[in-house]
Image 1 (spheres, helix red, strand yellow):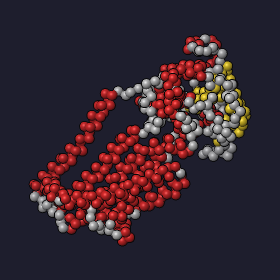
Image 2 (cartoon, one colour):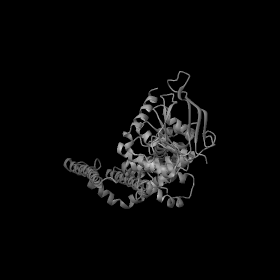
Image 3 (cartoon, chains in turn red, orange):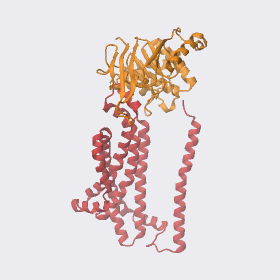
Image 4 (tube, chains in turn cyan, brown):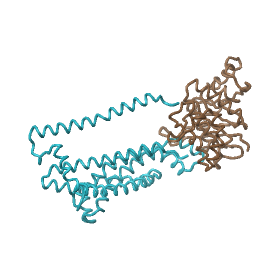
Length: 262
Length: 255
């Protein structure tokens, strides 16, 4: 039977109410930050107030935009490759145990190599352009996608497997009908982790050497003590990551709700 | 097709368990049984007696046993025999609508889904699911979910139905409704039914014949023919004949 809609609505209201809390905290934080900077008369090159930061964003908007586009391009390209690889390897490892046993440790090792070492190496091998950044983003993002996806793909329900087998389903068919849909929520949690990594990944690789991008813009701001610009840069990175995250969440809501093959 | 079940000298031993002393754990020991075509037979036994394993063997899910099994003329060890199989857990896929859950056997067989969707409309009503075709399992009551699972089981296209405690997780009232309703459907469509349960009243109420199994290693201790006429009435529980049946079942359970 249908669940009582009333309680559903109440729950929704309550959740909406709770989601305001982080916004309030953020506003309070910004307010105290500004107040503290004003009160103690802190030099803007040490700690700029929020107003100075927003002014910096406004003043530098044209320059920021070109850098944003470069970084976003790298992040999205890397993310695209990572999603493709993550899904392919997730499926392979979820379906085939030998593949999982062979690849899993290697995947873990790729995550233990410090990026701060890899980025300059890639700069030596591939130059200062687009490609090395994309590789770094791929390295950071494909791991959470493939691992969370695999983990949900191998969750087995003995009764469900039995029923499907009696119905005459092959191993692959069982996998397609029961396991893949069951693992989609896992895939999306991996995606959410990956998108939050993607912008940061691109920025870190730009630090080491790039012609354009938020990362190199950040190092320039740092070396010339334009602390407000540095903060502006960080603010943009946060916003970009949040937007990507929200986007994945929206797709998930649409997609996971609608899975139905008949 | 002949839809009888014949089992001869079935033995099964689990090996490689943690507390194994080398001889293995006997699960089934010398099980012999015959179910006539279109007969409704219950297997009653204490939990862990191997009755679920027996159904698994008949369904072709377990092959590591000794003895002979024939479904009609086919041995499920060597040839896939289509059977209908149902468990206590409804195993409905939460991301599918009721209708697409029910149609799963046809989808797996690569049957004509469009045609099937039209053809099963009367069955949907008969199974009391009309109007709920597009609901997700979580939106349905326990009884409805189990009826959906039973309809899906029915569409598995075998003439033999293996039901493993299908109503075990339901509350008493829903279970009685489901029993009445299973008898009704069975009366209309007549398949061979092998019904596993640990509920004595359920076994007597539903079956033509009750087989009682012993504790592990399970074997058939005895069988009781239930001669109440169909359709069965709940009031038969008050007759002396009913008490006799129950008494002999209890006796077999103890030995």
